[in-house]
Length: 257
Ligand code: 13P
Image 1 (cartoon, rainbow, N blue to C red):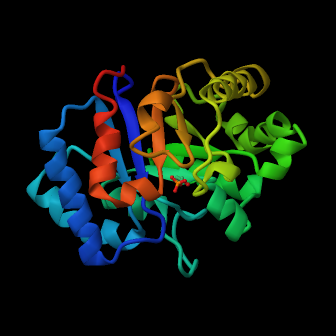
Image 2 (cartoon, rainbow, N blue to C red):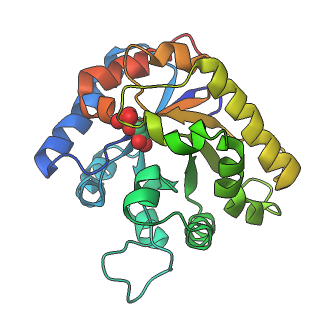
């Protein structure tokens, strides 16, 4: 990960057929050649695409987009129907994984720190960079318990406190901002960044190396530039499903460092 660049991650979630995904990926690759930017783009397509994109690595050893997986299994291998292991991902040129995404926490009941820790350990053991997602619901926000909630969500990371360079990026994605068109004020995002650092360094005693801080939730081509002034990167959902919009978000990094 290049910290002089802004990290722009596209979470495609459960979208795009094989031909649609290949088309979108190629549009992004082509577009990147034409637009000025200072971005490190990462695409998180579904597992299906990851398997299908190996041709890219055969023809282009260092493509200008990194590949990420939206999830990974808790075990190294074996009888876990429907799961994909860190080792398998690593063999398919995957560099990044998402852990703790709000949709996995909500729809698949993965708001469980011991399960999240197992995934983190798998990612660490296989040298996968982790985008660790956290964020509060509207209810928690209204009851002013956001920091307490984030502290609980971040707890699995304390187990990495003896690792000098844990290869973790934090993505703050408030649940109430995902897919709603609502976003927090940039001052609030900055404040959360500061608070998360305090939790990680002062309470969970994570070593000081800089942990990149991403924001996600209703990021689009219009608000990207403003948010980017305050964060190290963005995790983009629906706006990453349209090449034009995603390329505009990448272009918004042009004068950002
Ligand atoms: P949207 O950009 O669609 O709000 O999704 C954000 C997200 O969940 C990215 O991981």
